[in-house]
Length: 284
Ligand SMILES: Cc1cc2nc3c(=O)[nH]c(=O)nc-3n(C[C@H](O)[C@H](O)[C@H](O)COP(=O)(O)OP(=O)(O)OC[C@H]3O[C@@H](n4cnc5c(N)ncnc54)[C@H](O)[C@@H]3O)c2cc1C
Image (cartoon, rainbow, N blue to C red):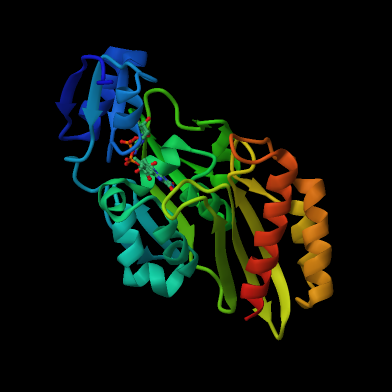
């Protein structure tokens, strides 16, 4: 199947994008890397009248470390994040998650912001951003506003980005000294979307964990924090007993829906398996 006919324009400025979004309303779609949008068009899951390509707009790409924040421009590709030295130094969770995203050819073109804006529940970046307490910079005609990851992912493929707005950057606070992280996911084949995955972050001081974050992907309609499991570990030493309590507590946090391959019970079991692996990795 091929995409239905559509008009295409390569915008040079954000102002041009906002004008086009105003003019075309629901008939317009922003095009970034196109790695999800073009597949949706080819499957005729979406039939916009016009695609607004934002890849020529200066200032929306790149990674900077300043004022206690790592800022990732929305158009930064998955591959740039994967290969970035500042990311490896400051946000090793992202470096660990990146190779799980699709395949190299897709990572070279797909963008960090596109993945966040799409909010696929099985995608890696949304769960990592939740675990890292990221802030999303959303820009519209009248200026920019900032939304925390906890507020941003609202429902299946639904985010806080308004119809005439563009996600322009992602800000992630520099983790405190002693922060550890682990990313674990299960897929049927390398490069597939996750059946279940977890992004784990915690601060470790003399073996005691604090600021524990366990964010899951592939289980709910949005990425989800496992607050009961997090509470089982917060302020404790990570012994096999605390890991077991956290793994058991997941039943209070997660109510996964099944999919083509896994029942809800299987998904919960897999979430427990990966949580055990992630917590043991934090301890290593
Ligand atoms: C075979 C295959 C396997 C894949 N596997 C994975 C995987 O394992 N994990 C994973 O996370 N992803 C996977 N992807 C998706 C890939 O990572 C995409 O690159 C990503 O989800 C979307 O980024 P994009 O830049 O390509 O966005 P696009 O496809 O251009 O856009 C996606 C959506 O976001 C909107 N959008 C894009 N950028 C912005 C912005 N800045 N502001 C507002 N709205 C915006 C678009 O309008 C569109 O609705 C896979 C894709 C393919 C084709």
